[in-house]
Image (tube, rainbow, N blue to C red):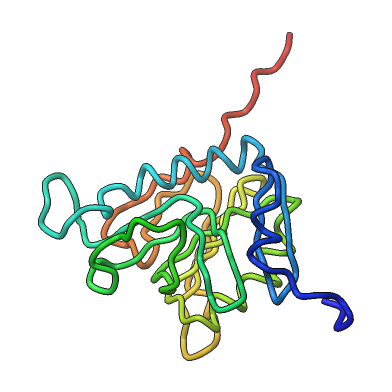
Length: 193
């Protein structure tokens, strides 16, 4: 951000039309379009396959112990971020408050990168997640059909694993469940004859 520019405020963010995702990164209001279908498909399927974790520990039908939310609004001081998915261990966040945002850093964040968001996700948001102590980060690229899994060690991200295509993977912090990546991607369009 140019030092002469005024720092964006939450009031600036609230004025952004609902057709855009609005965030404040290092004092700058950053907007991006709603996701295209490859992005939306990956995010939707991921949220669904992680559902067994989004239950009370020992609850029926699941591994439990997490809250997993779609596009939660995270407030980290003056920064306002909206990851595609985020998860909190229930031992750290026992109850979800009736609020529009949360100030406690998640234990896991997933950013589904698109051509219009990849630079912001990788260059601007990833360092903020490290600064705030998010323990795990996934970067999913639906066009390249890849998953990069990172773990925070100290203040730095360590690449734990990379996966692609139709692999079946166990990825931290959800390694208790095998994930079928082939379901994350759009199916190829049928060839015209």
